[in-house]
Image (cartoon, rainbow over all chains, first blue to last red; front, top):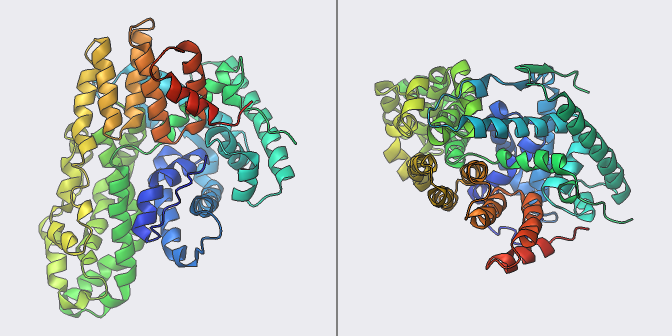
Length: 188
Length: 288
């Protein structure tokens, strides 16, 4: 659900402080990998910095930010290295803190990978609608505002996205084999 | 058109719910906000100062070279600083793993330095020519980029060291908040929480989770709670843990999942003192 308390502080730092976490999360949900998240969050806020003066308050700030994040995520998805490798497990393998709870983090890692794999089965458009509905908890009307889409389009994207997501989850669960260190997707 | 149902709330949709619950791991780790703010500030300052620096006398040559690089390098440096930080602060957490490898692969030493240079110039927006020497010197004297090795062993040192040379200047620039980037309350509490969570005691684990949640590290709180749930499936404090997990999910912005959990909380613990609050949260949502 969208916060009713839109921040009145429209200074760049104010916007950053208020919405850093939102931008980070949105980018991750839209397919930016953990290893690239810092760069893409920066990229997003650099655009925000450049264009903040143009923000007129007609839309909600979160709507405006989400659209910028969506564009950054879209550019990101087109980069060659991103299309080629969806998962790189090496980061997790190097986790070497002796205090780490290996079992718990392995389970969490598998769940996270399941989520990322299933989300990767969706196109960016489907993914945006899906994420706003299933994770952010927005209503379909709110989604149509945020994505500037007719309600009917939101419904059809959601329907397709949910079907693809469910299919991907059950496919992953059936295979259940340990994940290979790297999975190659064709980007479709 | 009627509103579709939500997958996370669907009966019998355990696998889907489980996948969706992993959304909590998409939250930024503790310290990320400050680290990225520092990198962002340096990038922005460097970008706006490029022209001024090019006209800046003897030391200006050094400066112009540094700032000319900085818009691109600053972005990389931000990643490196953040990654080092994430390793130090949340080692043991799921989110940390990715950063270990990437900071090694990219070599923070090479990429972090331009960020420091850019910081040196940050204190004088638009007036770099007045004191370019002072701005450059600390960097030359102290080339202190975070080493991957120390990032893993000590928590806060690498990043604070990399910023040491310019702290006074940044205070002058009115962005003193970045000076203590790493020594935030959450980073101070995190090792405590980890140590506590490793003590095999159900109530201690709840305290650790609460501690982590209070210090803004909701992702860590969730990890602790998850582990305690599997260690004490029929424990005395399941109710407390369930409530804490819901608060952690809310803090992480996973509202949809929090609502789903609130509904199950009300079913499992209808007599709980927290039930009213959870009922409100569950009802707050216009689901099926």
